Length: 168
Image (cartoon, rainbow, N blue to C red; front, side, top):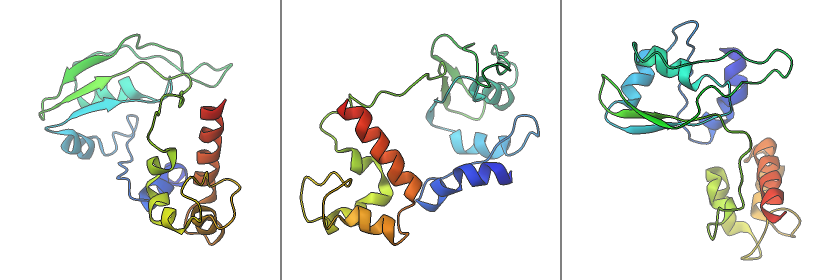
């Protein structure tokens, strides 16, 4: 669990609720089920992340096809080929989706990417320019927050990488 907290603890710090689960250790499956009850939830992630495996444990009897990680590539193989809505005994539904290869951000549209990073929002007012990209402009509230540790540098780096993909 320590490895998972290292990877995802940052998201808890910025306000996302994270439920650490394990299908192998049967860890927090009931807690996840309680959280999903009464909602329609979309399971999204890379191929081999364990979306179908988690759903099989969460809702016994589904028998969804799962695959092993490719030993050569150390990544998942696509076993789920289409999105499928599954009812949960606890109430609600989960949509199991095929694994993602690569996200495309070109269609974020008119929504500013910076607004998609909740930890940026409080610092946007500190930017000198209304159209600040938070990459190179002087007097940028977001970059100042990164410099003083109020925003994690790796989150800002993710933002810059996504921004670069959108502009390509």
